[in-house]
Amino acid sequence: MAAAQGGPAASPAGPAATRRGEWWAGVRALAPMLLGVVPFGLIYGVLAVNAGMPAWLACAMSAVVFGGASQMILTQLWAAGTPAVLIAVTVAMVNLRHALYSASIAPALAHLPRRWKALVAYLLTDEAFAAMTRRLADDGERRRYRHWFFFGAGFSLWASWQVSTLAGVLVGAQVPRDWPLDFFLPLTFIAIIVPGIRHRSHGAAALVASALAVACFGMPHKLGLMVAALGGIAAGMLLRGGGQRKHGATEPAA
Image (cartoon, rainbow, N blue to C red; front, side, top):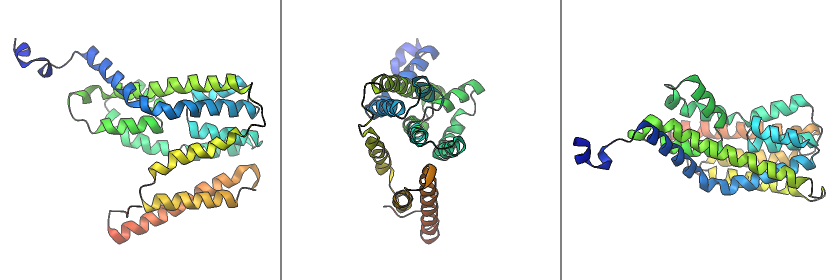
């Protein structure tokens, strides 16, 4: 009776309805980002096939690695005949950012069983993390089931990535190998990186890494990518540390 007087807003939804609602909320949060993810997956599939990678391996990478940036770099290194050890080290460096993502959302998952932690960790990507962080600040009723939000956001991205890469692999066999599709790779990364440059340290890291990548382009086995990454990280850390010492905890904005 009290619930009826309080109206629908005062009555918490049942567990099943709340889980389902949070799952769909995660899907909706990721929907706008799929406009960029789907073409990215298509390009990856085409480039992987044109690089000489077996179709089954290109699709398996999307399921196992599940990382657009690392898969694109891996494809380039594969085409260049880079030794497997260097490929593994380079991809690991690219994916180091996921350790920071995990540390940010770990407190929100601490109470969950291990199977949930493993699922969310597998589905954690750049886009999914962006959606998840917006829900971390929610202290309302939905907090109890926000891991379902994480699941919905991550799954929608995962499913679209698998379908788009499969489509790219199927189309790739029909695309002439002399088409300069790899030109879209730096354009894609520029579109990802530029919006995230918000401080001087970010800008310094991007500029130094870009300059080193061009200067070291001729190094064997694409080692210039590793040099550029290390140089960019070092420049960003130096400028960030200097800015914090000079201005306290606040870093000057770009």
